[in-house]
Length: 352
Image (cartoon, rainbow, N blue to C red; front, side):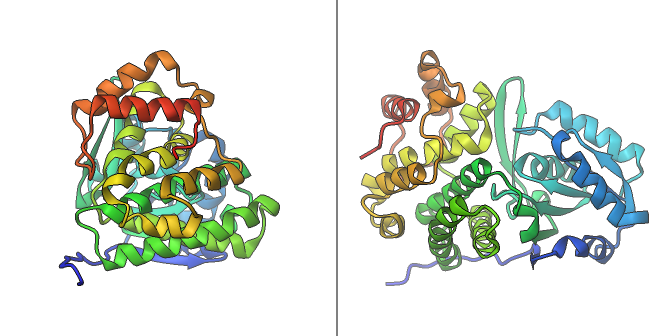
């Protein structure tokens, strides 16, 4: 029997293909803007400058200070630069850090966003913003956070290092995983998530052999779009809560943390929603949690929180923070249960 659902519709314009970076000036103009501030991280400043050069008179300058977990003090600096440049929109070039900064500027100023993803992190299609202040990461949702345009250029991912390729892909898979059991799931996100699982399963091993395989890159970027769209239309649960805690309170790297946690958070909820997670088990083999762990291992993903700098002495505090204000979750969230989950993720054991 088909369950009732509500689908709010799609509001973000998507441009997908090879060489689509050339269309960014037209997309800025289409939104009615003439002065775009280009955002990036420090290490992508050269690429951002090239994009600003491509924008020509439509460029208001570059802010190259985006950083992980969107610290509010960096956002304050970026907004000051936005106003000083008399910008009327932002163009975010990069991964989740840059996308997050663009969202933070947009929700505070009301400006429009054009996002050009260069990883598979998958926050560009969402109305979600996670920000860090005073050592704690908080998350909110607001229609004003959702970007107006996303330009996916497969060619920009051809030079993505294999390590970041793998971790950002697993980060994206985590979005789809939570979408399978979200209370507000619907057939659109379920179909996209199923397709994304298969596309990533086929693309990542191919990219491990040849990181510039254009067809595999296109599959992976398509999968990332599907996972991002899913996350933008469903409720987050345990996995994202833990990732936010470990990133915001302990400074762990975003994509790598998602990658390590994914098999363990999946396995934690599998006893409660194994039927809903069956597409993952069918795609990767075995149980959903173990299948993801073995897949992650096969493509060279990090498997241990310990390798990311997370100390065993912090396990109790992390479990305490994670269960203080837990997200709604299909399996009850207990301190002991989360402590055990984090111990397994810290040690890197397969959650079989």
